[in-house]
Image (cartoon, rainbow, N blue to C red; front, side):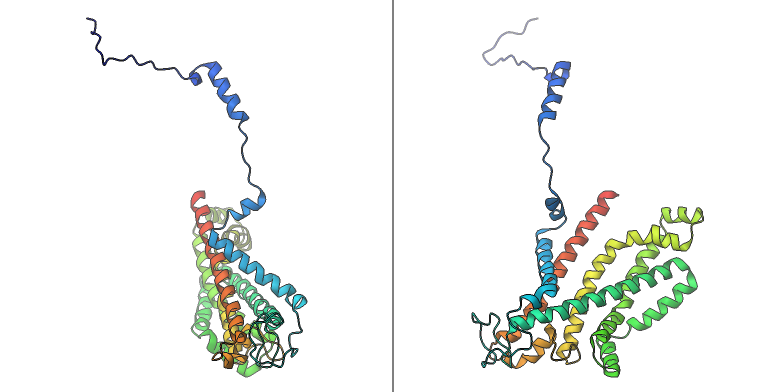
Length: 318
């Protein structure tokens, strides 16, 4: 029975896609091949590893590292030279950061002090992280008795507050650059040990490590090849946090007069020397404090961005 035509009846035609025919498939492939694929350059690929805040942190960290290397070369005056008769001078064209309590140029003092603040903290952090990671690996890989002895030793050491430990050692042996590096490293070795040991213990339970043991691989091989490479990313994040803690520790010691000694000065010493100008609103006390704040915030932003990127990459890999 034929359906009667109505004013609302419409005939709908469905076109068969060209992709279902061989000719259409070939045309589609040729069109796809003709579309260029945009490739990101190495700089964009590197920048994609960081969030916006991470890039800001990276710029701040690179800036202060650069200042630590070339600061004395670009300083307008010698670090200890008295360049003005005005103490606690304000900002001016001759003294961009003002002058300190003796009339010395604060920009030059901050640039020279960067070497000590960044250099001492970096050396102490590298020393603490390397020693702590080494003993953490040894404790996790060796066995029960070695693990127990090392764990109890570092537990006893970490129970002493870092500032108290530093004050006692410096009061006993005096303050010098090598002593400050040793004291700061000693205060934070136990923390690096606990982090690295925890990571290594977890990695030792994984299947590929058990396979290496079943193959008869030695402990040194397992630690070096199977465990250590998988600890690097978390330890780098811990390295950044430990660097911030050591910067604050050394600055605190300098503020108490136990850090870098005159005529040299780090940022903490500059704050202590010019603290009397705080009531006058002198930039001499403000600028080194801002330098400490920007460095610590920059490192935190960078490390947080790297940690998030590593977590995403690790999750995607699984």
